[in-house]
Image 1 (cartoon, each protein chain N blue to C red):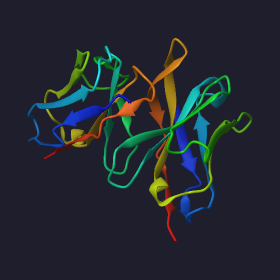
Image 2 (cartoon, rainbow over the protein chains, first blue to last red; image 1 turned 90 degrees about the vertical axis):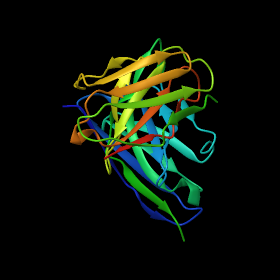
Image 3 (spheres, helix red, strand yellow; image 1 turned 90 degrees about the horizontal axis):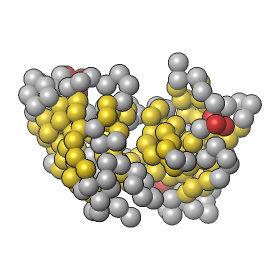
Image 4 (cartoon, chains in turn red, orange; image 1 turned 60 degrees about the vertical axis):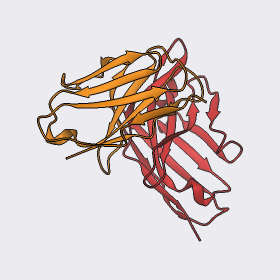
Length: 121
Length: 106
């Protein structure tokens, strides 16, 4: 069975750091395009970051320079290191597997249940 | 960025009725559109890709149409489990963008 389980969310002060994790089962993180998508309270979905199978990365402008996506091959886990956190980063963070076409990530076919990050003093 | 606009924001439908949801792109995206369903407190689930292809395990009462800038998701006969928020997402250009969602309520 294919599934994703996120963990590591919590309450952090503005300016602080947090790392969220996403453990995959039933497929290999390293050979897929993996994403983080977030949803602020009562809001829609925002694509945050992508880790491509070749190791390159993509970040939304809103998090560029502050967030780092990475993977751990032996643990089959995806991470999102979040630094210099702001109140507007408060959201549920979902990891998801991307489908690809001609080397491009197109849509997301497997999602985790999400982990909540709250940035507040 | 391509802006995806969904309408209506909320759709009130009775069980057994037909629901029609719209998604409009700010520029042509061909058929590069996916639909997701999100139930309260749950992760989004892929319903449709390529504007009209149902994902694995999605019931036939869900159908998608459209190309270019205008797209529609139709639920032919609403079941109790279909009351949720539905999002469209374009994958024609970067950044990939989502619509703001349509809530289907009783």
